[in-house]
Structure formats: structure tokens, C-alpha cells
Length: 261
Image 1 (cartoon, one colour):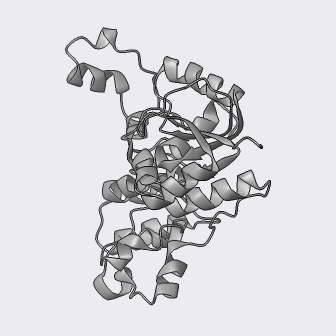
Image 2: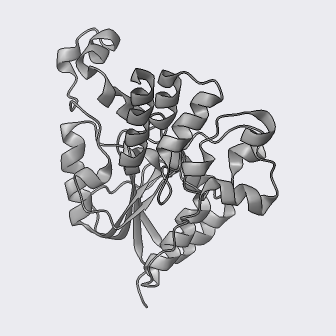
């Protein structure tokens, strides 16, 4: 009898939200468990962090020396490594400290910060290990995870959405929140895959899926400023949930240049 493909779900520095996206699959998670062997998934029960697997999903950014070592072990024992969620793909919310004095933050939070082993900056998984596939989002979209896993196990290259959130709005027949309500939406520069969740609820996209292909962040920064956002507020929109992808960092810099100009 052919052995089932082995799958692991690992956690680094994160809120567990992407693991919860797995658990929110409900009955589909049970069906998945019939097709694969979940050998490590602490949130769901099985614990075997050093097991050899076909696919290893990794949630979270890298923020401690211990996580670098753990990630190297995971990479060495997985056929495919998939980074899931904004933290794993681009550093996520905790990467905000990359733009500040992290030691001051530690001193403000912990009574004995010298005992806290933390890296000076938070990095995405790809900074320390080869990543075969990156699925962003805060949290990751569970449908993308299932589709990617199915493709990998069939030996095919997973198809990852590359359209912008704006196109998802158009497909769903949603009214543009910028045009109709004057909200500074990140949809024009953000990769789709979420189904335009936030605009469907009448609020602006906040960019959690990271930059789409060829994003014109500088133009969006100018548009956001024209809608009344202060330069620092524009900068925060690009450097918040998604973390620090290069395209959004460049757009944040453009906002700062606009303020000085």
C-alpha cells in the first residue's frame, strides 16, 4: 500500500492566525487528513517537529536565533517548504520594529530585557531558507493553501493569484470604496487572493496580501495624500500588516520624499 504524503505545519513568531486558517477548514481538513499524514501540527495535536515530510508549511517571521536553527532543520527535512501568511512571506506586523530601535522596545516591555534573545530585525522565512512557494495574507487564504498543496502533491507548479484586489472587486460587482466613499484603499497595489474581503464589507483594503506585480506605489501614495492622509499615515499603510516587501518599502519612502518636497 502506497504511503500517504507527509505534511507538517510549523510556527515561528506569529499570532497562530494562519494555523487557525487550517483549522477553519472544518470538514475539508478531515478530508485532507484522509489523503495526507499530518505528522506535525501542534495547534491540531500531532507533534514531531523534526520529522521528514513532503510538504512543510511555515507560519511566522524569524525573530530569534533559535528560530533560524529550527528553520534550517525544517528546510533540511522537507521536500517542499511553503511560507504561509504575511509574517512568513515579508516579516508581518512584528517587522514594524525594523523601522525603530528594537532594543528600546524590549526595554519598555520586559523588566529584564537582557534575558530576551531576539534578533535586531525580524526577517521573512526566505531570508534564512529556500522557499518553494510563498502564500501571503493575514491570515493566509485557506483555499489557496488547499489548492497549492494539491498541486505540489501532483507534481505541478501551484498557480498563485497575481491579479490586484481591484480586479477581484470588479469580478464581484463591488462599488469602489475610493471612488464612492473617498477611502484610501490599498487595492490598486495589493495582490488578490482574498476575494476582496475588506471592500466587500465596505472598508478599504489594507494590503495584507502584499504587493501585486508591477505596483505603482508612488502613485497610490500621492492619491492617498490627496484623500487627506498625512505622510506618516501613508507610510504606515505600506509598512503595517504586510511587513516589509521591497515594493511597499519603496512606496513608503516615496511618501516621505513627498513630505520633504
